[in-house]
Image 1 (cartoon, one colour):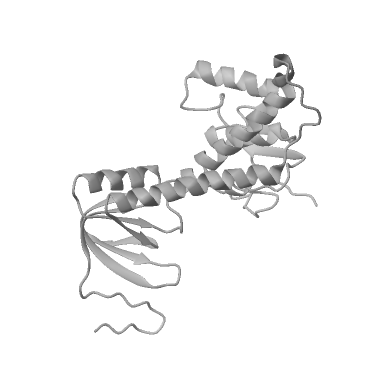
Image 2 (spheres, helix red, strand yellow):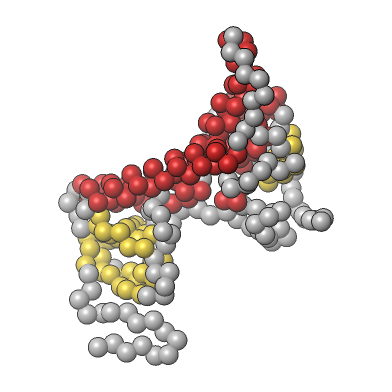
Length: 260
């Protein structure tokens, strides 16, 4: 029997469950690794600190941003291109509530799909924060502060990414937001400054520009979309500029002042 001292959680050491491989993080790296390990016959565990599987990409990144991009692309077609095809739509406008509902439904569908794949491939899912305590030992602390420890021959760390705060521009969830909050706006901001012209910044900037925001992109480097072919990056910048977005390249943000 293990008795915890006051203020400490108890970890059950007797009968510790053993796995061939434990994967920490259920994003595209983690859940794909878990599926493959299961297919190869390994006893596999997947540890995820959040309630839903899929990580940043599925829940608050690539998938929801592209769902909004698709919806706003349809809006732009109706407003600017439909008439060329003899399709007249008077008074076309965005219903942001419906748009957000569709985005959430897309995410939920993928969440369900990933969880089903875990079941199909016999992957044991643990919800909680995974910590490597020693070689081959992983403790998992749940949201209600319950802790358990599992043993494994191999560990894959696939903890993914998270938005980075600037020391002089802390996220407040209202005026200064991360990409997570920018996916959930209930109305288009009158003006939106996006620091960083990478994939996420460009996608969200484009979405809210299409929905009526005056969007300004600030990028430290001399080009946008680092990692993409330079010719494609330049073409993208021209297209987004024509769409109404403003770019300031080789620009360093050194301070942020919030009024009102």
